[in-house]
Image (cartoon, rainbow, N blue to C red):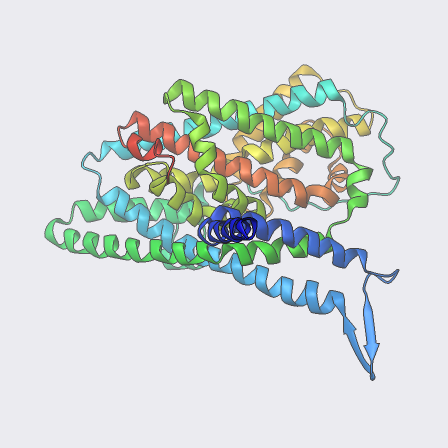
Length: 444
């Protein structure tokens, strides 16, 4: 009798933990999604689907589950996140800028943030190149004879700079052009501070709107376990593990460098520049990491990144509202790592030896391109094409790695948002805008 009571109590405690622990629920949703999705894929016949027919009615597993329920649930969840990005960035950035007592502080925030993002990107691609030159993932690789890849042309430098300044802020908000939104928000916030009493009324309205938007973020976060389940189920049902075995050495090398950069570079910067315990940051980012992994998009994850930086890491709104959106736009450490390994892999696959000057050019091009191509659709592959062209490698080599890029993209996004939060904490600490009691509170 006693054992039965103890077992019942344990079950109740476990059920209570699952209900109250959002991280655990998200993780369960992710694992269940991958398992169920892959089981559905295993049930397919040679036609790539499982069709059951009864009483003259055909039922397609792929059509009903993968292209139906999973696609519907996952798309609604991602759209719900993206729905918040533009209003959150605009409102929070206007609030942050208009609340600055020292106007020159914005220049310091921008300078520190951009410098740190460039630094981490440069470190990322340097580590990737060194690792690839040591491991040699492309040596002995048997590439197919006929491969092709058509890359979108990257915009020129003048065009990039011009496109940062909008001629129509409403259109920029509607299109989600993040750099244009950031610049317009800064100008709008500065104007509020100079408008006296009228500006104060507008600032109060934006502060109220910001609180409402953060409540919407909380609502979406509570729906996350279901959204993550649908996204992972669709991935599990469509992933081709044949691509992984075909190019596994490249895949695992990129994965290893991504993990190395996240658990070594960021903690060193955080501990050295801000005197903060990096393990606390990793612990508090557990929910955000699952969001980022599932969505595979820094932009879509931005609302959760902002909420994590402010409520769990103690970064004040004036800093978080600027550094986080900027990081989601120009911080591409994960992409830089992919480019470094992919460049060496493609060179080795084609039997081309890269000189020291070419390797330095890869570092320079990839680091600067992370800012120069910010906001361009398909930015990762465009940046890789730019790097390959710069050092004289065949662009069609990109076709060799596309098959598994989706899996790596998910991990790259986790690295990117980790970098965003790291930089936000470092900049906030340097500006005395970090609440260390909140940062060190492990109950949050």
